[in-house]
Image (cartoon, rainbow, N blue to C red; front, side):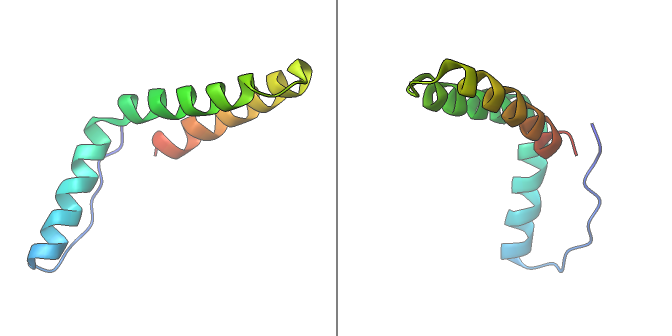
Length: 69
């Protein structure tokens, strides 16, 4: 996984943001799973199963792109 290397000013708000980014990097697998479940549940409610299969594949690729910096 890539490390986030950003210079922040030394303010409380900037430190909070930096700490949040580091925490999200460490928890990316949790984020991926939550996004997969969210989109999968939404797709299951559609009537057209073929449309759901196509959308699910596209969405999974986007999730990987978002979380694997």
